[in-house]
Image 1 (cartoon, rainbow, N blue to C red):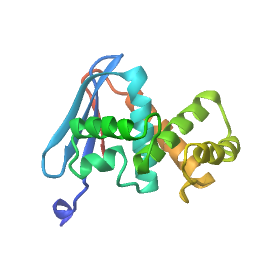
Image 2 (cartoon, helix red, strand yellow; image 1 turned 120 degrees about the horizontal axis):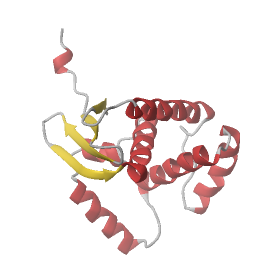
Image 3 (tube, helix red, strand yellow; image 1 turned 180 degrees about the vertical axis):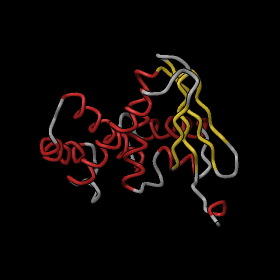
Image 4 (tube, one colour; image 1 turned 30 degrees about the horizontal axis):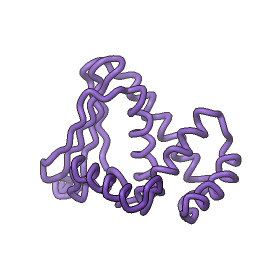
Amino acid sequence: MFAALVSVGMEVVFTKTNHERHELALVRDDGTREVASDLETRSYLRHDFMHYVVEKEAGLKHSFYGSVVAGKTFADMRMDAHAQNRESPNRLVGEGGLTELIVASLQGAQKEGFSVDELLTQLPGYLKVQGFDTPAYLTRDFVERATKAFAYLLKRYDGLKTGEALTLTF
């Protein structure tokens, strides 16, 4: 009855424009939107899905999707990245930096066929070398949930026809 009053924060819409390309539209509750068109699916889709899963499962608010919900534009984030790179070249910082490392590690582990145990054994040392402590959410349960959710999103996207969209909420 009051569902319309509940804020979801943002819709995340992946539209399959053809077999090799897609569009990502992020539509905030207030109707403002960020759109990235003509993205190469092979390069971006898996990364964007893994970001979504990690941020959603961990309840993160200051990484990619959370920053857009908070009002940041793609242009703002590019400027922030350039400024951060000038201050700390070749070094990721903050929640966003930590999330990038975790997303890349989960993607790499999945691609290379690493087990959850191998990932959880190696990842803390890698994070430490990069200047981060291991976050409390990075548990076996989290990795298993994230991996399953990622596979589910890929399967749903693969089932889309050209012009169809997969809409998620963040």
